[in-house]
Image 1 (cartoon, rainbow, N blue to C red):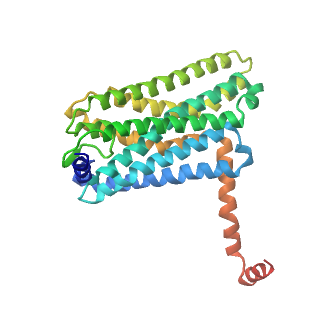
Image 2: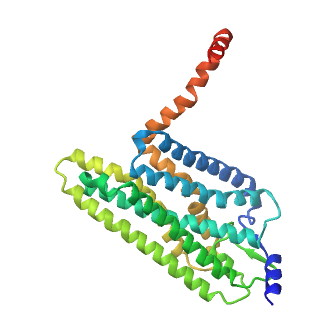
Image 3: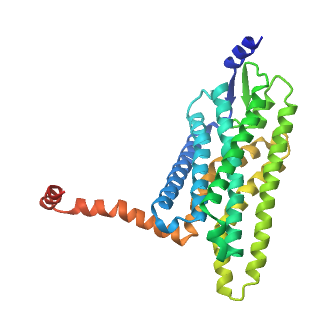
Length: 332
């Protein structure tokens, strides 16, 4: 009996419809998403490299930011390549193992990002409300523990949900009216009763969203009260500027999540869900490095130095006369 179920599961395939109902937009969408993914990869990997090589950025805030960039890069890489493939090929099928693997990794990174933003809010709370004790409280051990905790809970949540999805039965070819293998789409095509899996997903999602938002809101309430008590206007502006980028990232991320939760479950809402999912899975990972780099002087300076170190020396070297280049090479 188990062997029969295993054979049936191995034969199961999913069809990701994506944006196939708009054939004229396939090539333009492919180019747009390709540009977005390129910017996402370059921006997030560039952010990680910049933070790693600059001694001035070796602080808890940038430590958490580098992990946020890592999560965004991995999350986008889990989803976007398959989206790009389905926009240029007619065969939009994905194997059962491929679909489950995509869901597993996407779930890990989205849960990790949810709590990484909460951890960053706590970091800003300590920096603004307890500046003299900041280095003592935000020790390397605590920072490492907080980051490890976000990844661990992401793995636990994802593995738990994946196990319950694997316990379901699937029959033949299943059409998923989305471009990504997400939980509600997978269980909706199951041949067995998915109520337990749906309830578990609902409980985990509510816990993650409510707990992370409670941490973020409580920390920013304390930050606001502390800032308003500051006597100087310059001190207030500096405190608010340190939190502006993080608040922008939180608003975009959680605003999109809450919007998707509020979309009514009807056939007419599928396009809205797809557009929201694109913003959630593809656009946000691109926006985060742009938000933190454009509003942060330290990061912008580091980017400039990195560009000058990597590009300027090479251009100067190539602009030298050939005898001078040979002399330099001989001396080396």
